[in-house]
Length: 470
Image 1 (cartoon, one colour):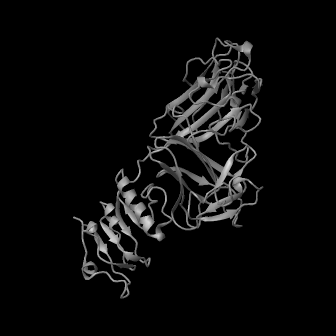
Image 2 (cartoon, rainbow, N blue to C red):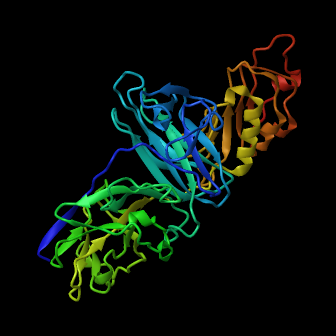
Image 3 (cartoon, rainbow, N blue to C red):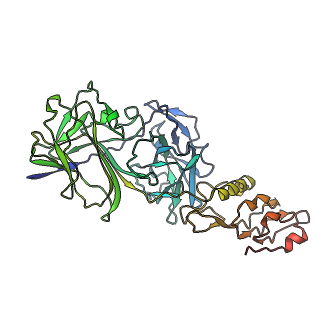
């Protein structure tokens, strides 16, 4: 190996564009907008977010009209705020959340906060004064709804969100990774492309950024030449394969620029795509992947009119890890690279709060207007449980305490509080409850000191009753 050629990644900041194919889930939410649905220049239908969330404050950002980044929803109160989107249980989805601060509050102070899905940590959102940032995750849903949440992590830094997109994927895609982990996108590049690629070229609406390389040549295939993408499990769009980069000779190799953030080893999933663009080169180009100077793959011979996919899975890497494509001794042509995806793996996904407790809490939410801001998983991720509840630390958490004091709530104590079977403590003091304590709460320690008038009194037995679960 006589020299090193480093890929120079060109990232373009672009406006989000989408188009809805006939998949089970294809949702594009313009957060903070209550306007009627609009269709963008790519015939993508965007909708406002009133159907998906009932709290937060809409704000305007000064951008062009019909741009989903021109509005946002900010959450000045509370710990966690979630959008809930209907899905099919066990569906593999791509979720994308975008954030454009745009100095909407005239403070020039872009916030830092957490992004979560279905009770799992996703990413720490680091926003900018001038650019939008987005985050993608691929995961398998656990129920009939999926929740995407933002959570405050620092005082006076209010989380917000500009747009939210959810796309179904074919269940066979990205199947080389345990479905109990999410894939967190780090980067996805189409080498030699001159513009961002997404739907309709990619029917799953993945975003492929254009990229090139220092001292690397570009090869451009004929747009009329078809590439059979069905030979790849992860189905890249044809347009991401119709261009490529090559080194200048067989003595020079291509080294990926590594944009992983941590020097510590993290689990990764990397998939590289190769397709020969010169018919006369078929069989003359052969190369291998080396990771940290160790041979990783057998010889790769890119096919013409098809795609060869090479996976790096069940593997850990850090920001110091090197990835190289080097021509084999038998090759008469240098290595080629068409497209690349790099993901890190999440921690094992949670199954969420016990479903019996979730059912009971939802009924409480219907009963008490003060609980309207409850959304997402009740107990997870720690410490972002819903306001007024306390949860156990079991792998599948249970609700063990409920504190609804000082809310001037009127009416009888709901019997369905007994649907929380692990509830040990219930504080309903300084409200206006009346009637008797339901028998379903006989094993719960209850504080029921109420602010009552003659028309809002608990029975004598109820007023004196205190029960404790042994």
